[in-house]
Image 1 (tube, rainbow over the protein chains, first blue to last red):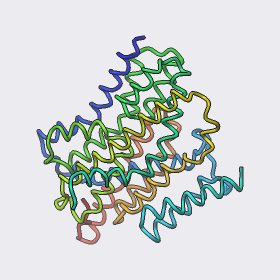
Image 2 (cartoon, rainbow over the protein chains, first blue to last red):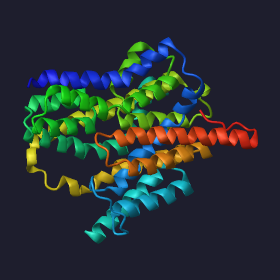
Image 3 (cartoon, rainbow over the protein chains, first blue to last red):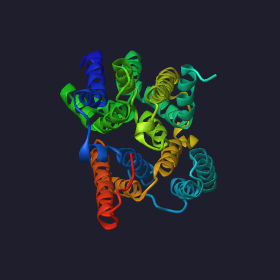
Image 4 (cartoon, rainbow over the protein chains, first blue to last red):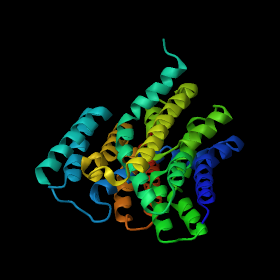
Amino acid sequence: MNEVLLISGMAAITFFLRYVMFLLHERMEFKGIFKQALGYVPSAVLSAIVLPAVVFSDGSTMNLSPSSPHIVGFMVSLLVGILMRNVLMVIFFGMGTFILWKNLFS
Amino acid sequence: MPSKFNYLIEGAKDSTPLIIGAIPFGIIFGTVGIANGLSAFGVILMSMLILAGSAQFVALGLIAVGASMPIILFTTFVVNFRHILYGASIAGILNRISKTRKALLAFLLTDECFAVISTKAQSYPSSAEIDQDYLSIYGLGSGFSIYIAWVSATVAGVILGGSIPNLNNWGLDFAMPVTFLGMVIVGIRNWPTAIAGVSAAVASVLLFPLPNKIGLVIAVLIGVAGGLVVEHFGYRINGLRVIHE
C-alpha cells in the first residue's frame, strides 16, 4: 500500500471534518436549536473524554477500586474544582494525589 | 505592551498541561509506528499532516493487520467524526475572522486545542463580547504549540525507538483527563451545562465498548440533548430562560 497516499487521504478526511462547519457557517447563520445545542458541546465533549479515561484507566477494563490512582485523583480533582473553580489548582492537587497514590499502590 | 505575539504566547501557555500529557503519547506513537511497518518518514508525516492521536494509533493497528486503504480511510472518518462538532462550535464563535485563519485553526483543531479555545470563550460574559481577533490568535498559539510538541515527540519516538523505559509508568496518562476535568468544571455555570456534562460522561462510560469512538460521539449528542431538555424544562417551569452562550 502506498504510504504517502494513505496518509494524505487520512489528512484530507481529518481536515475536512474540522473545516466543513467553518465553510457552512459562511453560507448560513447557525440559529435556533442548533445554535443552542452548540453551546453544550464543550462541556459534553470534555466530560465524555474524561470519565472513560478515569474509569477504564488501562484502556479496556473498568477499575473503580479506591487503590486506583485515576479514581482517587479524579475524586480529589472534582472536589478541588467545585470548591476553587480554578484549572491550575485542579491540575496541581489532581496530579499530586495521582502521583502519591501511584507510588503507594504500585 | 500587549501585541498579537503575546496572544499567541498566552494560548501556548494555557495549553502547557495538555502538551505535557500529549508528549508521551507522541513518543509512543513514534516508536510503535516504526514497529507496525510504516517508514520513519511515514510515521512523522502522519503526525505532521493528520495531528489526531487516536486516529493515528487506530490506523497503525489497521496497517499492522493488513487492512485495505478504504477501510483505514473510513475508520479515520469515524474516529475523527467528533471534530465536526468542534468545527461547528468554533465556527459559531469565531465567524468574523479571515478565511486563512479559519483554515489554519481548523487544521490545528485537536481535542486539546478545542478544549483550550472553548474554555477561553466561556470566560467571556456573552458570545457577543468575544474579541474574535484575540481569541483566534490565542487559539492559533494553542494549536501551533500542540502541533510542534506532537511532531517533535513523534520524531523523538522514531529516533529513540524502544529505548525509553516504561513510558507508560511516568503517570502522565492522567495529565490530559485532569486538565480537561478542571476546564469542564470551570466552564459549568448553570444547570443545563452541568447536566450536559454529567449525562455525556455517564453515557460515554456506558457506550465505551463501542469501537472507533462511536460511543464518544453518541455520548456527546446525549449530553447536548440533556442540556437542551433541562434548558427547556427550566424555561417552562420558571418562565425564565437560562442564560448561556
